[in-house]
Length: 568
Image (cartoon, rainbow, N blue to C red; front, side, top):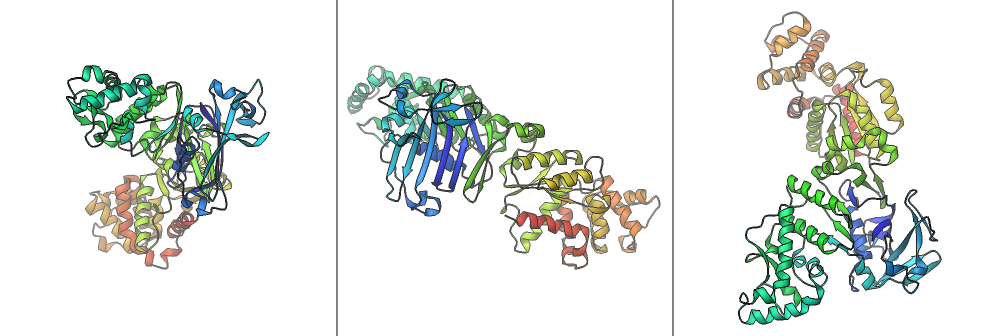
């Protein structure tokens, strides 16, 4: 079974969400923190909760408002045959059009037959599961046994139980069910006398499963020190089935690292649920190195039996996935919207390539597109300066700085992020109108992008040397020469086309000299990386207490950009 549509109302940080899912077995939710990505996974888990005693509290309601019930609806396709029976849910079947991503209340021969399952929780905190349609809005009970048949489970941080043969775990499903109780009884008797003596008979079935788990572990790159086998875990020994856990030699696998546990559990679950499953994987990268992330994602892609819902905050994960598998989540005051990055409207913006080159920015709330590394470093310094003035930093506002490596890439990158509903701003030089023109600026502003370009067709270095107080200009020259080891006076003389005194104290403020210093800084790359751009701003930050400088183009546009950052 696979999910075709999801609706959520009044659940945790989500006031409302309606999401029609395109075809695909790997769905990765991305976006800034607190956008409700994990809540979406939890909502699916709750709809298919495999037991009757789902515990909820007032905090599970949106803004703790218990007068508004929690309502979560999941529409399922690829249904089990038994669900079609009139004695089961046949009267509640609906139709799903995969081409238009639309739901019809009546099934039809040209539509996929689907079933909508609704979880409702009122102020009494009692969950109620029903299969519903518009024809029968009151619905019929969706039973615990049928929720279990969806095989919906979450791979989270706490997974120790999943490495035992307890009821409902992947290992218990992977083991032949008819032999579990008998083998367990034998194992309990053996434990009272000599556990290892009778291993070949009493634990044969469990050890076969353990051997299969070992093969899966090796396939996924999980280290195996000895040999996997079933063994009584002395910390949880019991005549109950949960006391039998998976071991590597004498070591319980619950002692594996978190990433290895989650990775192995994913493999075991896929092997044990070959009839189909819905697997929810929150923060898939947690505890894994980049090379193991790549291996796990390949394993997930190769599994054609299930549907995977992932969340991530990792650029590595984004680079491993395609735009068809990535969905951006935006939460605006509880109203949640999900956009697939491969939608037709985004094709012209080349999102796939930008995802690979600029993955970190896709995990932010806002994006500031910088023409080059100098701008990124300069803004980092400006960020630290604002923090020293008791203002909230860029990170507090969820703003990411993105170096696009040249003016020619500014427009398309800004359009791509704006099309995915990221608040977007641009900080660019004005000295390359061939690559980023006034018409480009106008076009971006018309679609809502904030654009700050230095006036008079100047670069950042040229604009700064024209606007800064003279002491700060000389401090910039000193930084480049004494600390960054540039032949600054040769650079300036080349720009002036004449010699000057190498003593800074003798240099007198004039337009000609400011122009030459700006040109030298630009052409010789005095501050052309993030670290040097940052150091440069720190060197000249004292200018921001000068009221005359605050009226300049440089200061005005930096402050305009900061005002944009502070807007919600």
